[in-house]
Length: 125
Image 1 (cartoon, rainbow, N blue to C red):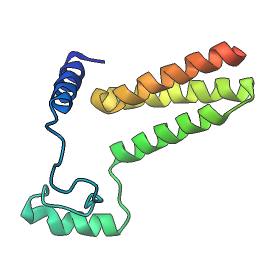
Image 2 (cartoon, rainbow, N blue to C red):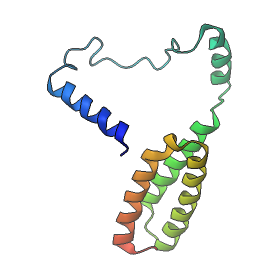
Image 3 (cartoon, rainbow, N blue to C red):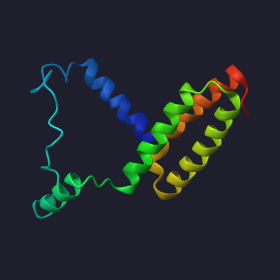
Image 4 (cartoon, rainbow, N blue to C red):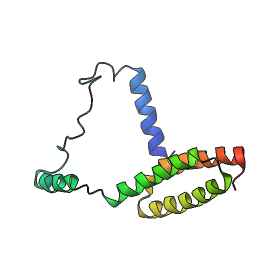
């Protein structure tokens, strides 16, 4: 974890311990994932058209692919295929890090844990 993540996590845990998250408005209700109030008014129509057309930003598509590959790796039992999957993921994560390092930090840590677990279980490396 980087320093900012650790500080944020610590602040959240302290606030939670003080009960600051208890009885918040909307607690227990589903989130409104269609809320576009964060989008500037002049861009809302364009965003809606892109969303309805199924457009996904390249960064989001890349993250989805990495997560999907990680999930496949978790289920892989053949050491040879696991090794190929690990190498493919290493390349994908490296490319994503080069484009935007903040997007892949969590995936990279999770990937490292899975590789370590699989290495201990079947020694694919």
